[in-house]
Length: 168
Image (cartoon, rainbow, N blue to C red; front, side, top):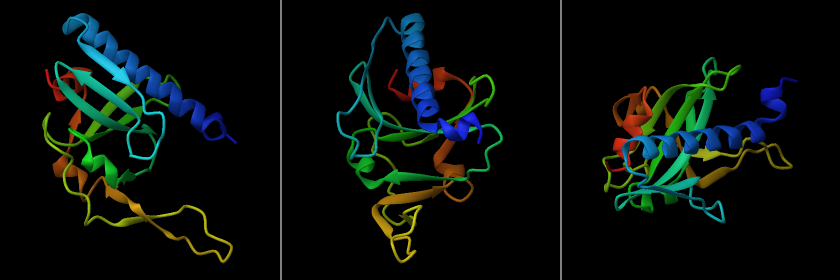
């Protein structure tokens, strides 16, 4: 088993910290330290971090994939759409160096809610119940990168674009 599979939750947290560190560094260098970051105590509303910059609040769900991943789907909690400026940032990183390669952004301009996801496919549990049935997860929707993200998810190569998305 590879380290990426065996320690996936460790890697997920590491990528999150690296991302927050890059945002804070950008705030230090270009925005007079105007960025604040917070984390929810409970993970039940579909976001991993809260970023506030100059009065704009973003509830951000982070997704990660390495550059050679075949992942084309991401699951998004419907409660994220209830948050002001809710968005998904999908980080594509190099598996060996953990350097960020691409950022995909699903959301609207600062101050606008997440695009409506109510009509997207309802996600199912990855593991079956005792009868082998994979039950639906009614609060989770599936976003397909090729069908839904091409128009709503813009490709950005720089963290500066995400700083702009935060409202500045």
